[in-house]
Amino acid sequence: MSSTILALKNVSKSYGRGAAAVQVLNDIDLKIEGGTSLAIVGPSGSGKTTLLGLCAGLDQSTGGEITLNGVLLNGLNEDQLAAVRNEHVGFVFQNFQLLPTLTALENVMVPLELRGMKNRKANALNLLDKVGLADRATHYPSQLSGGEQQRVSLARAFANNPKILFADEPTGNLDAETGALVESLLFDLNRSSGTTLVLVTHDLDLAAKTDRIVPIKGGRIG
Image 1 (cartoon, rainbow, N blue to C red):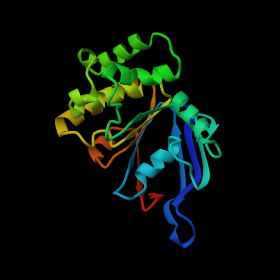
Image 2: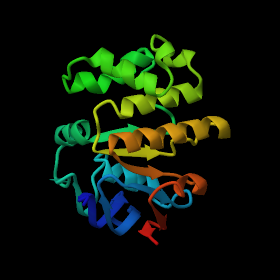
Image 3: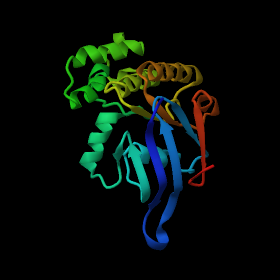
Image 4: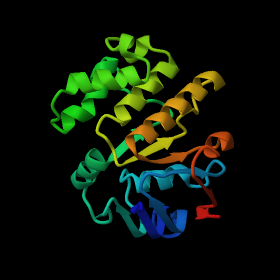
């Protein structure tokens, strides 16, 4: 039986202070079981990406509590949050966020190096092979297509064997055919790794492939 890997209790987020404060999220309650997949869907400006950032420890909530794999994120400083992310979390972003001065192989090796893992090169090459890019290992991001860059970012996301993977519009910058390939790889890697997947998307066809869909509108879960 799976246990809860991510729990949000009365979570809110606002920016600014006083009369100028903008409330982005209101009283969010959410529990996600380990090994499952979930899609957060909603219109632009609904708070999807803000919610994802809070769940992943990229930002701090204004109110409420967030517990990630048994760690209470509230009150942690930036270094502590970074350590939690490095230990438990993988990321896939819409705009790839690969380091331009590193090759595909070196990009995948970054999280392995941060954790001081052994056999870094062999593990990174294995991951590149899983996404069909072993022959592009020495290429730089500028030498890769958008789809190839996203596949490299997928390999990097799984490099540290994350407990939970957060994907923000992972196919948003890709054409339909390339997006379908990335989707397939994402779900295949997630399944084989036993990772929990939380993705933000406006693509309802993509969302339908997850175990659970959570709609959000006006900063509230519907």
